[in-house]
Image (cartoon, rainbow, N blue to C red):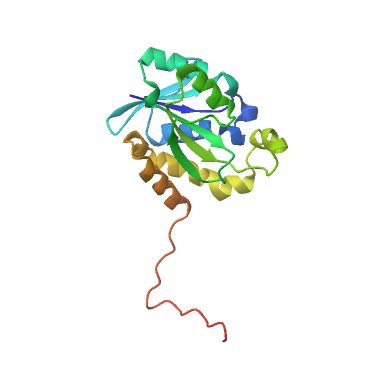
Length: 207
């Protein structure tokens, strides 16, 4: 069994914040893989599904970001899920928008949601770091993460990324983290089509 956690803040005013991309990712996965409807439980919203023969419990804590660990601990205790079988999707300011990295363990890097989870269940869980970009000034970080994605970001990469992560999710379930990252990267930057003999030759610089 795998506990899939998306981090964010509850309420319509936060729904499209950059800080809520963890919620968005879980929503996309739940839709893509036909999970049950969400219901309130464990201080959050819970949906259940099966991916590749593995039972998945999806959780969106409703405790607000700083208390995410309470919700995660409650679900882990009920289902007897080990820390190593917890997978957390969260926003990452140190990655450019649209970039994704998967890692196990490590520090929380100042992310309050991760700090709360580690305080409750320890650090040996997997996390999917979803890049939202850095504002360039540490004093602007809070405003940056609590601001909605722009229309250009939404149309340029956010929706595309959510779809790519949901499609590649079975690779995470199978512990193929590297393949998951590669699949998402290819979806975000598909290779250029190969030229054929019928393609027009590019003009020479001295033409």
